[in-house]
Amino acid sequence: MAVPYSTFTQQGLPEKPNAGLSYEHPSNVTWLPGKRRRLNGVAIIANMFVPTAVFATLFYVLGFHVRYQQPHLAWGLLLVGLIATAISFAVARLSKKQQPMWYTFFAIMLGIAVFCSAICGDYVFKRFMEASLDFKNLNSYPAVNPARQRGQQLMDAGRVYFSSGTKIDQKMSMGFQDYSEYCVAPIVNGAGQLASYDFWAVGVDCCNNPDHEFRCGEYNNPHAASGLRQLDEDKRKFFRLAVEQAEAAYGIKASHPLFFTWTQDPLAIVASQVDAAWKNFFMGIFCFFLLNLLGVGTAVLGFSRIGYF
Image (cartoon, rainbow, N blue to C red; front, side, top):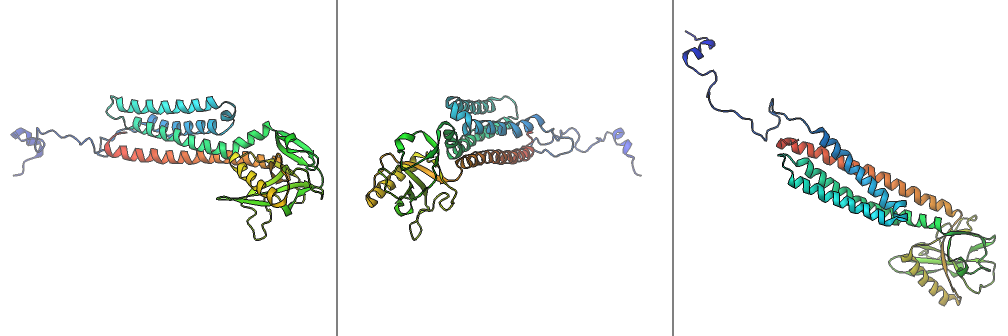
């Protein structure tokens, strides 16, 4: 005769097999029913946005006006970022909580944010912004006649607008070959030989054609009669060597050579440099946010597998 389930206990039988044995879910199994832990929403949100905010702030400080006007403040803020990273690592190591994983992840991403912002900010500043900000502090000279004025009179020139009839003299162009070819051609007014050729149009890798013609800047623009000063000292030393070669080859003199990018509108070049800086800035923030978001997603998945949220 079958014994009803309700009579098991009455006959001294345990209600469950192996009664008295304790059942504990393994701590490293997260997805068992009733044992799923809540996600640490505050930690996830903080790790999603704080490193990106630090990256954007330091990127701006090191890449734009702050570094130019107050360099000590810019580098001081970078130092604060490094100290904050070190403190975050210390907190992660010394935390008495059982699950300090988000502290460690935050410290790592904060360190990456500080490191990447320093690299990106330095690149944008040196590649785009430094020269653009220098031009604002240098003078602009209108109606400059290379046949009448000397380079020594315009040592503080940033933008020069030449007088009517000024052109590039292609017959006396010259190139100096290093890893790149540094090209120069005198800017002249009139047909006669000048006492000193102090104004030069310059460019890089734009005269290595079969005829060795100067093809730099807006050389073929009939409306171009202006120059934007070349401020890169690393390039200027090679342009000087090219001018010295031209002096020897053509029997001319250049007492105080000034180097310019030949163009119609110097301000348009400056504006394009600033625009490029801002595009790099916003693209950098977007890319870092995606990287950080990917890191947070990976961390959530990884921590869930070991039961740490």
